[in-house]
Image (cartoon, rainbow, N blue to C red):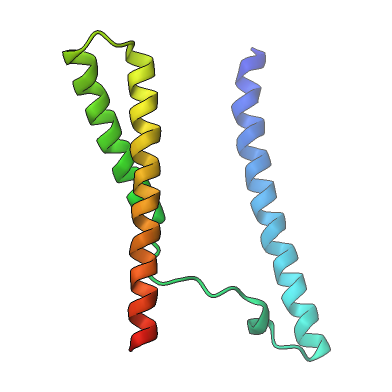
Length: 111
């Protein structure tokens, strides 16, 4: 019976946290406007085309696929194979995203 309260409390807590963060962000911007400061000066510009997450997930998917192939073809421990391949190819995906963004930034600076 107590186990049913864990997901309820978790979801409720996450919802309350999101609402409070949005509310305090609104109050902060409202105070800035009242003081005569432009709130857009303090916003962080997100990079267009941020591909870190897709590269990471593609790397993990390739790692899981290769982990399955290694599990079937070799006598290695299945848990070790899946975790090692997932982490290795996930990291390679993040490295690929870094070099991709670096190349895009260099291309923008030349133009």
